[in-house]
Amino acid sequence: MKKLLPLIALTFGLSAAGPAFAADLPTAPVYKAPAVAPAYNWTGLYVNGGAGYGMWSGNTTTLDPGTGVCDLCVNQIQGGRGFLGTIGAGFDYQFSDHIVAGIFGDGDFSGMRGTIQDQNPFYAGTINENWSWAAGGRLGWLITPELLAYAKVGFTQTHFNGTAMQDTGAGAYVGFSTPGFTTDGWFIGGGVESMFAPGWFWRTEYRVANYGARDIADASDVGSVDDIRFHPIVQTVTSGLVYKFNWPGMAPPALPSLASLPIFQAFAPASVTPWTGIYVNAGVGYGMWTANTTTLEAGTRFCHLCLNQMQGGRGISGTIGAGFDYQFSDHIVAGVFGDFDPSGIKGTIQDQNPFFAGTINENWSWAAGARLGWLVMPEILSYTNAGFTQARFGGAQMVYTFDDSATGDSTSGFTTDGWFLGGGVEAMFAPGWFLRAEYRWAGYGAHDIADTSPTDIEDDIRFRPVVQTATAELVYKFNWTAPAPVVAKY
View 1: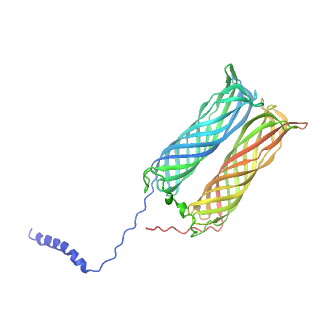
View 2: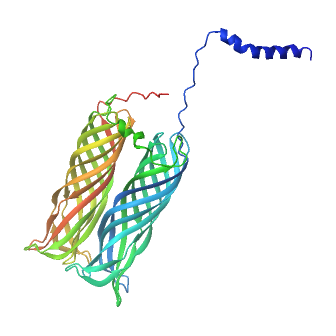
View 3: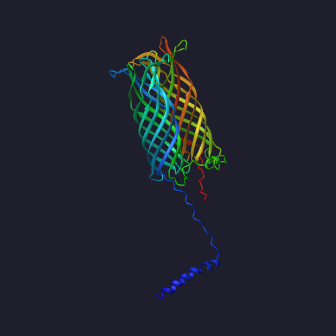
């Protein structure tokens, strides 16, 4: 104890004298540890909402209501299109620096209107997909800590409304109607999600859903004239906001102030311009078309069947193209391009008057236009595009819709002009090499197509198609200059 007391006294003495000694010593520079950037973590809950556009194509045949045997046995594809809104919620879990997986559920409220047809008595009506819901899982890859590319799959259910049937000649209501119905199915899709402010994300998503066939009675108070077997497939593209709870660095639930958004720094001159230059691209995709149709008398061009009906088609398409971009600032890129799309988007063309129908295919299209993009990151571009387009539809051999026998009639191929609007995301995965995902909507002019045989002209069919496609592409940029690494500022 006697040996400890001097040590304790010395310790307290040095502690008390420390400030005095320090005052006489030169001041050493003080270094602060750099601030630690928030570690982005996608684990947690989110809610989302948005809007979009979609098409459906429905395989249809007409059945005898008593026997269930087909009256008109040739499958025909009807079509529909329109806008939709979506709301949803989900939970994600981040397994590594790059892998995110989760579960989700969402509901869509839509106005995708088209045609349901009972061809046997020349009846048709307007049918609408009112709503759908879906639940499933998604698996994503983090291209950067703030940008997720993902695929998803799951169960879905949709509801189509009932419709009052009209005479396709005069347009008058006939007293027959079809009931609304709900049908189950499955979906597959994918998209990209990127942060634009802490906790706030922008999501763009593509989805195709395949529903089961339903037999729908075309009936009145006194009985059923036919059953219509209807098998819809729906393709949609949506964009919207996602709010992620407990995202690192996020503010309380509220929209970010306008001043905090990077668009206000958009027009500063570019520090580097790696996007300026020529590129080539190629890819593959899936698409649908819907076409407004009426049947005209060949000589006079007066309508035989004046009620507009929508036919439909669907299938695989490809694309090859080239373009030139110019980078105006650290965030803004604009360019011009052209592309050629060989396709196999097949559907129905119909001359209802003599019970004829055929398979018509969009063989190819080409487009030229401009695009304007926003660099989310130096290597990632989000863009919109628009321009002129032209499409070629092949001729069709017409058959009897009762038994699929040859009629001797056919329609000739035709080319039609139009315009397109679209958008997508492009991201670098190796120097000079990029992946692109793009959606495009194209509206074409009406074309009168003669339904002819070697001896006469049966009718003219007025056909006005609208086409939407979603493609995944590989892009090679010549003279790509890798952006300089971003240096953190603290």
